[in-house]
Length: 342
Image 1 (tube, helix red, strand yellow):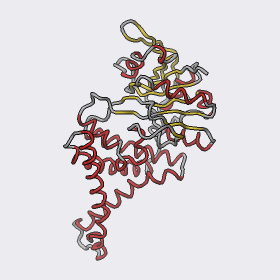
Image 2 (cartoon, one colour; image 1 turned 90 degrees about the horizontal axis):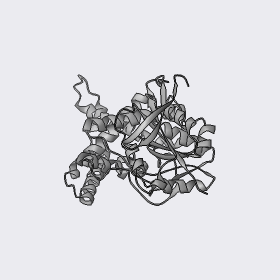
Image 3 (cartoon, one colour; image 1 turned 90 degrees about the vertical axis):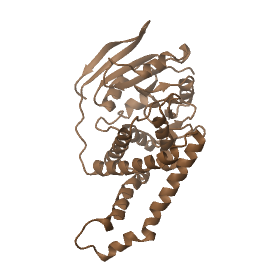
Image 4 (tube, one colour; image 1 turned 60 degrees about the vertical axis):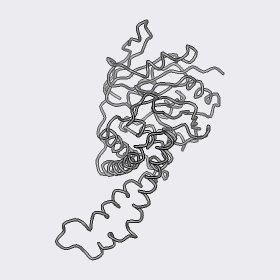
């Protein structure tokens, strides 16, 4: 069976360079998509839903605007849809070879066990083809069967980020098959500054909390660990707060026993830094990686609290759908649909 695919990209505007389109243009002709839709708005979940309704192919490929598809990736992912049980196939997003030193350090954190636990599969080509869960797949590099996507109602339009995680959990609970293929990779830049890295971790934590509020799953319990990490750090600082009367039981927080978990975490983080530095030959990562691991979990934990103790905002509903057309000098766009309601 020969399958074609359509591409849907959520963007904030089309009057800028879109690396995803450049990457698709550079693919061999037989690997290029049947059609490409750029969906403009401020609600990526709704934008992608609108884009899928315009697609004519059986398989839809979701990319971010900076996802550069590697040659061979489309074919690898498409091959899994020859099995009619497959609803979704995806692979990792890798750091580009020409990325900055900081981006490569960030990637070392994201791809490490201590930095990301099981979701590190999203940031490194690990293992072999396997049946997946939402912890293995990421929306910037994910193919879905269009019919199933529409039957399941697509992404929740009030959830971003983590809209794909909630959607994938729904699919799993309906018995559909998800596939992770480490050979089906895209290249995507990482956060370029420390502030952007911390903000990303906070947003991911907040998104996870909101996802758990609308569709709780037992498998999400592991994602609560950073929240307890933040509380634990507060207990370490408690004995040093300038309180007029410090309770006697605060002495527990000064004991070596109470500090032992932090010491173990620090040693594991340092070991991860040493491993990353020796593997990638970037010796400053020996100290940079442990610091970023700490910040990733700390700000993710803060994001969890923000997500649990705040309401989910009402999403904007204005969306414009453009079809991208190849031109001699690059690509152009044709406006297909503009809708202001869900």
